[in-house]
Length: 457
Ligand code: MV4
Image (cartoon, rainbow, N blue to C red; front, side, top):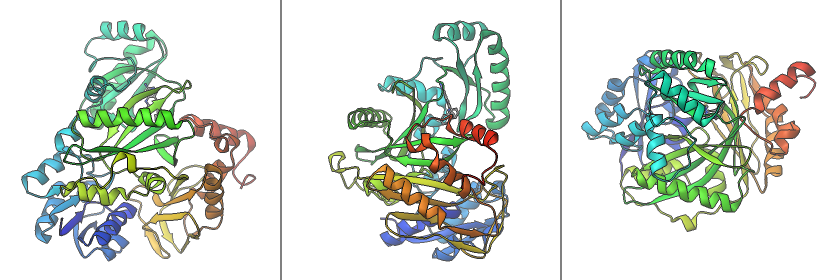
């Protein structure tokens, strides 16, 4: 097992990894930017190294700085958390060259999944359902028009290097296709340095459902069920839950089996997430695979009892998965709310000093946060300040628990998204489990016509 792990991240996820290391008896190294000198991840790590100025590009995204910190402290592994360098095949390669273990999949698998058009092809070959679309990048306007006509409008143009919603264009008629392809290519070039785009049939108002997998280096792969992540705005997830009300036990088993076969086909190791769109008829289509720990992993931990971060560390150290698929059982229902430092009406970031921070505990409540009273929320990084996760015997109990927890949470000094979450938790469609990726758009439109947040909360 590793003796010392460097955590190449900040915030709640850096703390989450430190928790796992402590429980496993592994020493930890925090890296931090000049803006994070007083952060909890620095305080709770055994050692810490400043890796640069506040801007992410100069610190948390700086591969030579991260590698140097690992070499100086003698860390034998790096956990990248989520975001930042977590899906950098380059970091994984440099780690390999430096004999530092990267806690994540092999660089070839990260690179494969980073190319969405290639991932589509490989997944189709492995028997995973995908939407009709182009076999690879579009290289010819006439062929693109012919293809779009064959699959039928609407279609969506996506960047092969994209993901998370950047560089996408929905096309509803042939006359719009050429322009959409060109603007998507220009956006993709600017955002990712790769202009390639591909075409897919567009699904209206789908659910976003993703499966968690774990694979070890001995050929074993298990799935930990699904998460429903349809409540999002501008590709930022706001609320996630597990299980999804849209899946029967039978469908879960079938989709889980498909995902396991797909992971085995690419020799997937460590933790991964296979994202699907689910259409109104309950059909699943592969969208992309994320080769990292996800923000919303706690809801899966709550219903399965598996500590995903500990499993990641054990897997990276070469250990076998400590359980078989048949030993995984799903108990109750879990919901996560992402609490952001932002105005709940306008979504404008609200950095500053939190003077009072208090979240009540109680049965079935879990809080993942780097916030505490008198801490500073920096404007340099994303606005997530806490994740509140609840577990209940069923969805109804989980919703009631989340409501009472949010109602009794005190954050003074900055604005937070808590009032928005409380409104969502009272929404009749949300309560009925009628979810889709269009939920927030409709929800926010209704608010405009009914006048402000104040009356509902
Ligand atoms: C789609 C789609 C509908 N049809 N692809 C958005 C993020 C990126 N991972 C892919 N996305 C979508 N791809 C087809 N063929 C709708 C979306 C989409 C979406 C997906 C998941 C969660 C939220 C979303 C919000 C808008 C659009």
